[in-house]
Length: 552
Figure 1 (cartoon, rainbow, N blue to C red):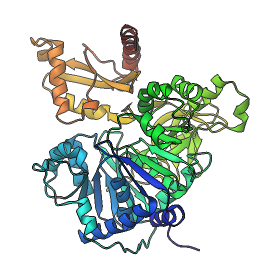
Figure 2: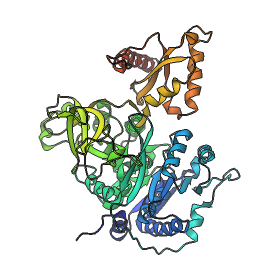
Figure 3: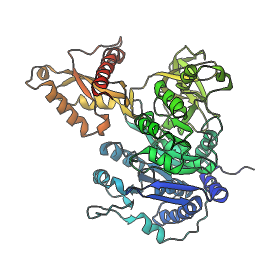
Figure 4: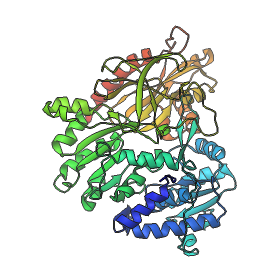
């Protein structure tokens, strides 16, 4: 039978087959909200009516500015299932960046989580007249400017709604990512692409979720659709535990809710490890950890598997890929290996999930050579799948990002071994990955060069024990700047202030190094490899000294 693959089918299946399963949310006051899939289903239908009554039509973008909560989960279903497009805004981006994103997306409504009311106010001043709906409204509402409260909307409408998605290629979601040039780029997902992505990640050798699982998505719901977990969990019938904006203790959530599977960036799990280890008997249900966003150190993989008995599974992907592309689990042939050798395999980004094709190339998107999978040859990773984007939102596909035969150029440099395990070794893109978030070195350099005393600037990402990578800015001053009376500390502070006006705090470089000259490549570009060679080892040495002195 040929009929559209839509997210309404995911919702209907969860309601009819898994209606008694639960969604629990840690609220801002530390209480826990809990309800069943059936109750969620009824509220989603009311929400669909409410959004329609506000004038939203097929194809309109509806933004969210929210954490991982049950209301956000309801929006994940209600918005796409009426034919509109869900647009989760990354609350970690600056107001300047978000204002530009909202302008391009032309969002018709914005649903705002009250815990972010203060920071949203700065964005609201920049985006002009938009309909704003608040949930988890804070006690003090005098300074809030909004059109309605979430719960009030749901009370005013009927609970009956008939889904009518006529074409599986209708857009269902819009997420933004930093491009190779640093500016935000939108990626549209369709009902078909997300439905197929959901089927793929629920394979036994990928997320492998079942009705018996209780899943904790620590990865934010504004980050590449939370890796597809809101759909994968409900399709499988797994219970969900949503941590809200800032869970005080992940160990509490895991122990009190019997969590079996959790997902998030390595930084989160590095910070949580000590507490989890202290309470390893209380978290005996915890069996699998899905990590992505950046590589998890082998020593941390070993610690989780050896000390806590938690299987660590690396995932790799991109916003352009919906986002999952590869997943790292051991094969039967690996069972004979020593533990150390197994952890070495697990540290790789893994094999393509069913439906994803990879190839290694050298050259350009128009003239390239495909390279062998021998575990040694390094090339750029190109990818295609039914859930990989074919262009950016409101942009025509370019040869910079897509090849002539339709493969996505990821910008990642990697090796792939004969068994299909990929290992990222470098990035062709000028992006720094800090705590699972992308920082554009080019965007930072552009703003630094606006300062009258800066002649040249190069931003690099150096290894960091806590965050994976952190940015350092290497700066050459103008002749006037070089002879000024300002100290390096004064100049560093001035440059920090300039960057802080346009970028979030975590983007700001940890250090500003003032040099007479930045090394150049043969074509006159800043040689960032040379800078990395000079500063990366220096940064690690400083961290090691701090580690020893503070007895961490």
